[in-house]
Length: 252
Length: 241
Image 1 (cartoon, each protein chain N blue to C red):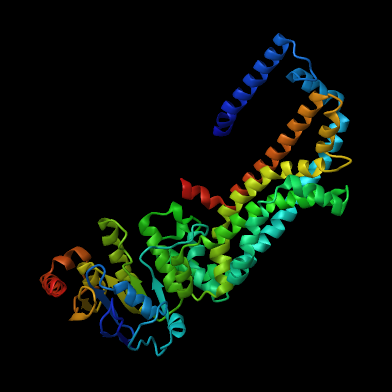
Image 2: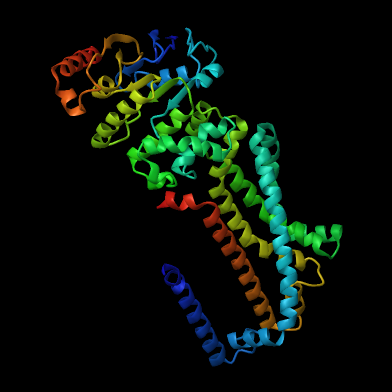
């Protein structure tokens, strides 16, 4: 019962914005290629439905696959860093430094290296997603109270027991914070990848629509992109509720 | 069983011996090194000098295998149910989860927690959490129980009822107990012998054997009896030096 009530303000604000937007565009007579009214965007959805669906699916696939790769690599790397202090000291600075390289610069290089297909997009999505995952998981693994480690020692725990029964569960809330950030980044990563060179995907659609002054189609693409990123975010949050139910009682 | 300590700052030449099946309370002011002492006996820390032995084990790792420590804070894992928290040691010892649960269930029921098996720690009261922590300690299956102010974090009413409860539980599960407390009544109620430590650096200043008709008598009568009051006086005198 509380859920519809919680999202009500956001929906209300959205409806009001769309309404005002429509009125202002109508009243000023702004041409659609300059700044389309919501009704024009809706028409773009209807006219270009096949195009948007096809390319939306391409982008969604890049997002999901890239996100999946980032989760696998990120979680694996965080565990490896946790078990070896030497590795941690060696890799962590490089990890941080890697995030200062702008994706805008990196994307064309990857396209040159891997071509116009799925691979460079996947690499870029994974690259922007995996950092918050590694950091979240890695900090989470270290977050377990020192007292728990001592307790586990008195309860006959070996290193693996400590990891399985204390450190890993303790890391999950922090891992999920990282996953949520990564989910929000995935869409941006995919579009960057497509922008640098692609024959399909929403980024490609937008790039083609700009010189044709099909501004409404750009808006429609952005809306789909937002919806996909939001859906991924909601999915991760829902999964967190199932996997980490105790973090909510701790907050309560 | 022999234990001796000589840690420079906190403990200064504590010489203490607890016989098998004996229950000893270490009584002393806050900060006199009682918890440090337990940590050393348990094998979590090493003494800087002297010799420590628990059930014949002298090395820290070997002592870890002999002792079960119940810490001051309950330290229940928030993601495990009451039952699964109690099972921790059994699972660490290599039993399957199902097997561990079967072993732990009767004990939780004995401790009056049968209905709360599946509850997470956040859903339990302070007294219940402490009982789960005690079950977890018992189920480690060690001969020597080290209890570090087990009821220090509870309000006085809950503490009184849990002291009574622990007294009975220890009567049933006869183990060797080293209890640390700063509560004189708790020490007298639970132990066969009270060892009084001085303020830091901790040294043994008095040993008071406790012979009370504890099993027959309800707690309220007991703590008002002449013998109890006299022992209490002696213990307090020793604490205050």
